[in-house]
Image (tube, helix red, strand yellow):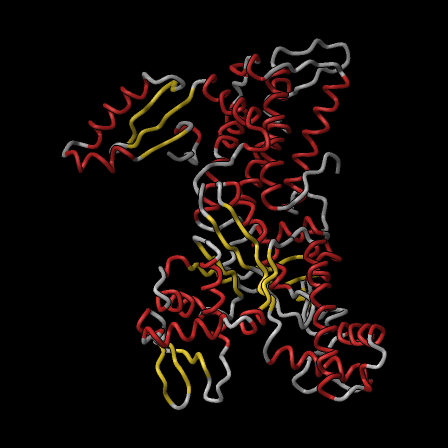
Length: 526
């Protein structure tokens, strides 16, 4: 069942007769005629027409449309939620930026999209654990430490190190907490800067994410996999199964046998574990914790991880379908028609704080969520600062605030709404009212699709359509007297006022529910 683009074709349309008639061995138009006759007898169906070779166009009666309004108001905050993923335990890993600098713009996109995806999955009944993989081991941490030590000494950053004002800030804080750090023997000095510096950086990352509306249930330390022996156990299991082989002094996983484009080094020739060794142990740890599905949200340069993670699962004797990898594309900031490339604090990259400082949390989150992560996106700061329909987040939030103002005025006029179950919603007969109601009815399907396809941007795009349907109704110039809700001057309250106000309330509820799924506020005033 779909909403036809042309409203003259009815409220809903289906090509079911075309799909089924061939299997039944009957003419599709004849079969459509039989379906039309049967459907016309159903409660809530006003008319069914057969079009073309066997399409069916349906029109609902006013009472059936009113049922959508009642359902939205009765369910309240739960409207749009389903049980599609009930009983499913999902580990959702996202952001996981190295604790060597502030969250950059790519990580900020995942912070917004990942959090929204978690909310959408929970709306479908899943038990979601949001997890941050804390990369506190490896060469990038060594470079971070050398950069901090250089900054503390007043020296330039190493050639392979990290620059930016934040390095100097953290180095100064390390010295403030550990005044004798630079006078310690080199190994102790580096360990002090490592321990304190990484903790300071990660605390800052967590705080900036929290301020952005993104919090995690688990912060998993990569180093714990090595310290606990989990990496050694996973490697031993793969050796025992024959899925690791030795060549040129290194140990390789037979990932090509499981669909990867090549075999991967797990233990390097010097005996040190490669990065994938931790990935394998980490996946096993997630499954041992009881997760049915492990979703990884990775950056644009991580396409190779899809094959290797699925191969790792298969080599461990697990189902590769328990691994899902989402790849996010790049984000570009534009201001005054030109790319914005430099951060005031980080120096070389745009950070989460830079974007939030420019447009605020709501606009930042919404703009990053509303596009598919499969495509690169340009964020126009000039547009996001506008208080016009050109700004999509303002357009949606303004619809919510407009309704709040009408409902407040209705309360001031002492208009008693009563229970929606007692309202005569058959009075909502305007075409724009029908279009708005049918849009409300689509919300549960949109949320289900967003969860099933892992595409929370569908919710944002739906909200823009809903806001558009409401604004057209509110601003109706074709029949302003019929569209107007509240009386003017000494006018009596119209019989349509109460049904219309319930429609307003239902629209407000769905706008609020959708914005909540995106982690964006629903203001009462703007």
